[in-house]
Image (tube, rainbow over all chains, first blue to last red; front, side, top):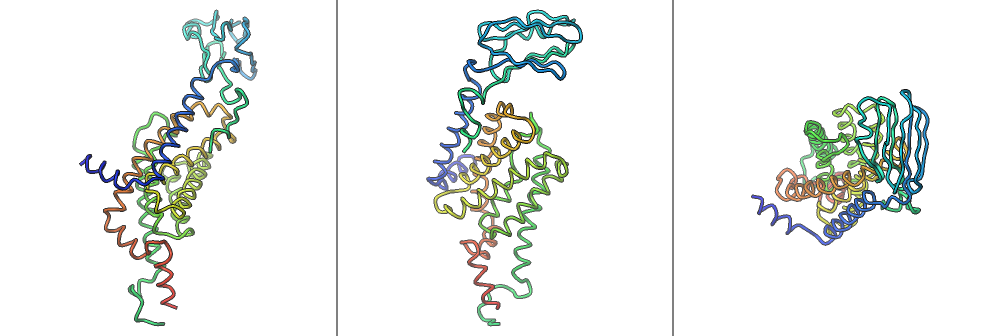
Length: 134
Length: 200
């Protein structure tokens, strides 16, 4: 049954199908590589507490004290990575979350309402959204 | 009123034949939306696109206005089944469906000798997905939406190839389809035009 379907499909396949399939797969593959393995050079660390948002470069090492309702959460940026060094919360999940450096990764400390995220995929080296879509 | 060269039964009329076909495909699309809705998915916006099967089947059967009626019915039916008809999500589904179906129609009309339903389906899925991503970017989420773009598009890629294979089979084997096609004439409107000329 499956063999028959495959055979029939091969018979029906026309040149443009192959071209389109190749282009589409290439595009998706390109997007996978482009979006998920972007070097962290232009990425930035976005820290959000309630309505306030701060943005720091991931390239410059620094220590940030983020004020939350429980106290200060200490976020460290070093070697292009960000992590929570110290937090006033009870369970310390945010510290256990470890280091983040790729766009889209995030750490959240719910008790202290601190949200840390790496941003900056699409903005990196002048790549516009529309450049990679048709 | 030359009656000797009218090939179809008079009392049926051309309009009702077409309407019946649109209605069958639209009903089919509604049913497939329900099936799609039942299939569990890791993320709600990852669609298989089952409801697009009748749209592709209709490519060879209808003129553009008729085809657009079918597409509109499909969008409305899908909105009804998913319960998104009056929510902002409807904008995504309507935008994606409309863009992809127009793209598929164009592709079919231009290249139907050089392309099978696999290619048409692929282009349709890619168009629909990118339009939805763009709408999501400008309406709601901003550029962070592109983080989910690769798996979203990959899903569309795989499912659209499978749907294309299915439609290739269906259009080859279905008796209903071949009789519908015979009536329509292989090249879209021609068969129907001849009939309506004969009638006037």
